[in-house]
Amino acid sequence: MERASLFFIQRSSPLEMNQKGSWTRMSSIKIAILGFGTVGQGVYKTIETHQKELESVLGKKVEVAAVLIKNKEKDRGIHPGVLVTDKFEEIIDLNQLDVVVEAIVGNEPAYTYLQRAIQRGCHVITANKEMFASYGTDLKELAAQHDVSIGFEATVAGGVPVIQTIQQLLNINRIKKIEGILNGTSNYILSEMRAKGESFSAALTAAQEKGYAEADPTNDVEGFDAFYKLMILSEIAFGGKPDWERVPREGITAITREQIEKAEKLGLRFKLIASIQLINGEIVGSVRPTLVSKSHPLYHIEGVENSVSIEADIVGRITLQGPGAGMLPTASAVIEDLIHAVLKTGVPGNSFRMQQQTPEDSQVKEKQNWLILNPDDLDHFPLSLSSSAELEGSCLIQADENTVHSLRQENRNASFFEVLGEFMLEERQLVKL
Image (cartoon, rainbow, N blue to C red; front, side):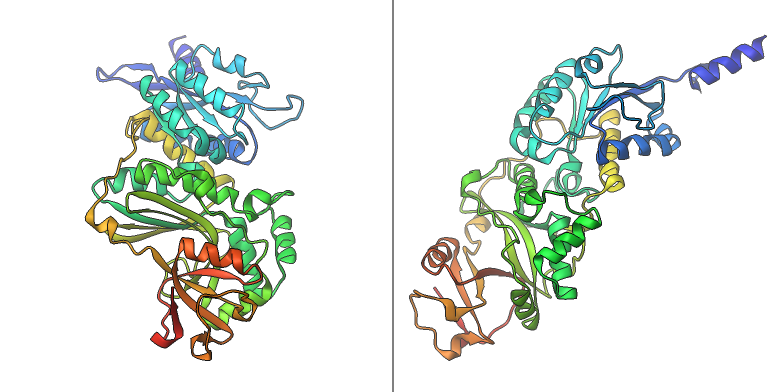
């Protein structure tokens, strides 16, 4: 009878041996997953397939207690013991709920759900970049008030641990600048256009067929996705965000095959670059198609890969690279946040750096190099362009953001692209404005 009884307890509740050498029931961590799309499914599957690893690290079994879905009638392959519901109230009222993982699209109801989870005392983890870019500051403050953690690694670059790197590995470094390829869809399209000579529309269709782009790709190709991620990075790197309306945001829809070919001849590649830095005490950011030279670490990032280059005062420049989206890479980021939350090794909810202005910041060059790919289309230019200032039908100018903005307004048919990395020209071939 004793053996039979012990066997029954082992099946119904995992056992662990305490310090006295006797068996006791192992406590478990109860998780709710809000949303069961690509990310939600990836988290669920990872918890199932890596249960032994989770128990080894956490000392507890991780159990998915509930899943919030839209259609309860659809079979999703979820174990019968898991509460599957379309009502958030049923989840927030569970007897035990330790962690809430949110993988919903859009600001609401995701923001409200996470507020209520935090108020209940749950750790929360989100993969929702639009919502967190808009309400992350409020959620961090609320989490701090309730002494819970908030994980958001999955909001920026999928499986690339850029958030943890900035928050935990660069505590003393003063970050000067962050540049990144934060949208795999756009990077794939630009890579295909260059490698195969395809048009934008053909490359976009290929991305949709492979599942890299949504049926409505606006967020990706118009730069919104990268913009939201950049705002999240700005706050953790500099302690604040620039005025959204003042951040230039351009997508890749206007990039032509001819422009890509011309840039390639010059040793440059088009990338959709998100950039943020501190200049003269002001946080300055941009999201736009940019020309990158071979000397820059983002030059070789191809396909759906994401990469973030961080420049700091002590370490110099470090570059992180990896899959920026997909079921398992994003689930990996969520699970790592889960471990930090349970072990209390994560950064406190309201933790972000308030970086002070330093003498080095005021010395940051406000002027950048810009390439005009079609100088013949210039209608108004403050200097006459002689043949000595042209380079294979292109012109390189050195100017600040405001000057280039004015030039663009006056020369609607001309194309201006910032150039990153070393791009050597003779002095007489550079027009300084």
